[in-house]
Amino acid sequence: MLETVLAAIRGAHGVVVITGAGMSQESGVPTFRDARTGLWSQYDPSEFATEAAFRRHPSRVFGWYLWRWRVACQAMPHGGYGALVRLEHVFDDFLVVTQNVDGLHQRAGSRAVTELHGSLGAFRCLDEGHPFDAQLLVGIDVPEDGEVDPPACPACGSPIRPGVVWFGEVLPRAALKRATLAIEACDVVCVVGTSGLVYPAASLAWAAIERGRIVIEINPNPTPLTAHASVAWPANAGAALPLLADALGAQSRGA
Ligand code: BV8
Image (tube, rainbow, N blue to C red; front, side, top):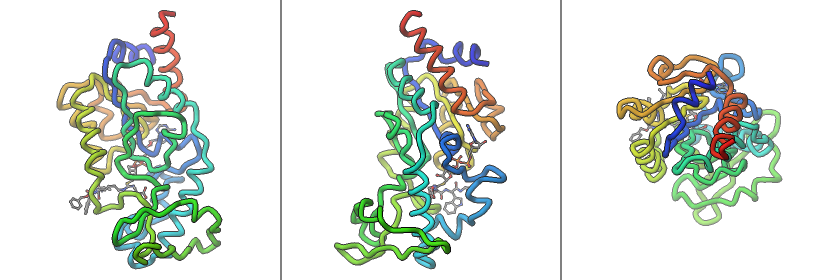
């Protein structure tokens, strides 16, 4: 399978890597839809990942995100993240387009990253969007019942919310535009660890297929994209990406 992927990606000038929660799974950050361990198997997204849910139960929603932010901060980027950092130097143009909100790509050292769904660490106030310093939350414990009263915005008093894109909210325009332009300009799109069910993020891979780009999917499970990908590599991100980076890195050094 590695040889097939290498044949598909070799010689590419522009590469876009689209990542989802599966990219973080081997770093201990739970995915959303994996049957047993996915967040949505334990938490109802309409009760936790919408503005209406936050307005209804601010402490329950804020406490849940504070817990998720803690999990993300304690997670260590696995070898697949380091492989993406190395791949940045193999291609002329390289962009990571992530649906993830855990910040692991940046912590691993990726410099070209666009976050479609915001970031767990980018807290802001609900009504005016005033940024809120996450460091002020470091000492707050999440109790057994998971409920933490959101602090009030020092500037306007409205409750502090996580800086993620909830269901029913539009994606950050600049991030979506950067991702769309990169897909239009690239040769190869690598889709890693996403079920491809959430839009408009999921539409990016389909746009690549419609434009005749080479699309490589890395995912241990089938998704709606699998049958349409140029190459479908049934593998974990932490295993596949280092193999790819090693092989391509060796090539670029003329090894
Ligand atoms: C929008 C941030 C419109 C928050 C997330 C009603 C009203 C409005 C919109 C809608 C509506 N009904 C439907 C929609 C559209 C909706 C949508 O797509 N819903 C889906 C569920 C049908 N989209 C939206 O609401 C978007 N906004 O449309 O606004 C609008 C227009 C105008 C005006 C106003 C509004 C906003 C979508 C963003 C929602 N926010 N997250 C948070 O994190 O709490 S979504 C959430 O799902 C995450 O961001 C996540 O990234 C994303 C996608 O999930 P995946 O990353 O793919 O994760 P998943 O668990 O599903 O899959 C993991 C995969 O990894 C699996 O395939 C697994 O096999 C694989 N895997 C596992 N282990 C590994 C692995 N792969 C590799 N290696 C491994 N080791």
